Length: 107
Image (cartoon, rainbow, N blue to C red; front, top):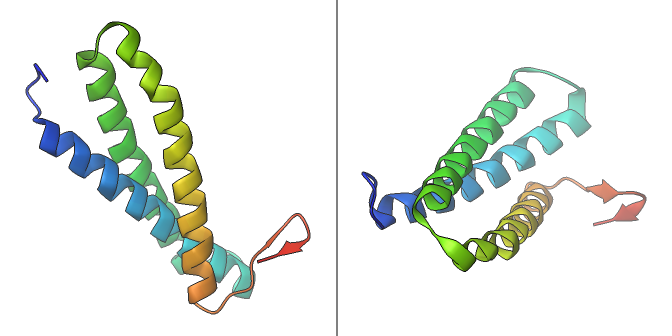
C-alpha cells in the first residue's frame, strides 16, 4: 500500500466503522421504538455517522491505492460490510430487549 496511511490503519478503520455503525443502529432502533426522537436517538445517529465516515475513509484510501482488476473486490466487500452491519445492528437491538420487525417479519 503506497500511501501515507498504513494497511493496519485502513483495516482498523473498517472494523471500527462497522462496529460503530452497528452499535449506533441498535441504539437508534431501541430508543425510536420506545419513545420517539430524543437525545438517545440523536446520539445513535451521531455514532452511525462516525461509522460511515470511518468506512468512507477506508474505502477512499483503498480505492486510491488499489489498481486494475483488484478494484472488483470492492463490490463483494461493500455488500459484506452492509450485510454484517445490518445483521449486527438488529442483533444488538434484540440483545437489548427490543423486538425488531422488518416488513412485518418479527425478529
